[in-house]
Length: 286
Image (cartoon, rainbow, N blue to C red; front, side, top):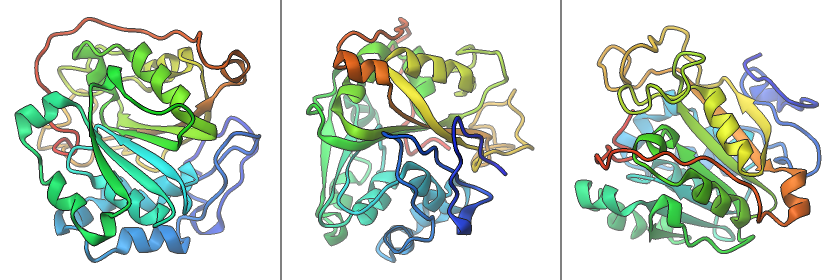
C-alpha cells in the first residue's frame, strides 16, 4: 500500500492502493476517488488540454479524495499559478461551495495574469474568485475555510524569505473545525532539510512536517501516490531527465488539539531570510 497513516486506516475500495485517511475527530471525511463530484470535476471537458495532460502525474482524483473534498466546501488554493488545482476544486465543491484562487504579487509581476482572468470568466468557475496577496500576509477570514491547498511551493518559502510562521498561523486560523491543510512538494534527499530548496527546488519532507507542526498542526494523513522511485533527487526539478516526473510527498494536516485548546494564537513557526530572487509561477513549475 502506498499510504502510511498515523492512526486507523480507512480506505475507499476503488483506491485502496493509493489513498487512505485517518479517522479521529477533525480529520478528513473519507471520500472515494471515483465519487461523482470528483470524477466529473476531473473529466470536465471545459478544462484546458494542457491542464488535463498533467492529470496523469498529479493524480487529482486521489489527492482530492485524500483531502476529503466534498460539495459545499470552502477552499483556498494558495500560489495557484494558472489555477490547475483551483479549477478542479471548483468543480468538486460545486455551486454550494467556493474556491479562492490565490497568487502572490511577485508571481503576477513576473509572469503576467497567466490566463487567470479568462479562467475565472468561464461558466464552470462561477464559484471561484481571485486573491492577490503575499503568502505571509494572507487576508483569510478566521474559520472560513474547510481546506487550504499549497502545491509544489513550500520549498520556495525558504529561499524567498517568506515568514512561514505568519503564513502557517494565518492558514491554521482560517480553517474551520475539521479543516485540512494539504501540502504537496518535490522530495529532496532524506536529511537534507532545506538545503536544496533554491538550487534544486526540492525539500526534505521531514523539514516541511516539522515546520508545519510547529505552527499548531498535526499530521492527519500522508500518501505516496505521487512517489516516483526512479527520480534522481540530486537533479533540479527542471532538469529534462526528471521534469514532470519527480518524486513528491503529500501531507494532509489538521489543527492540533493543543492549538484548538489555545485558540490558535500562540503557535510559533520558522522564518528564514532569503534572497529576493523571483521564482517561477506555481503552475509553471513541474
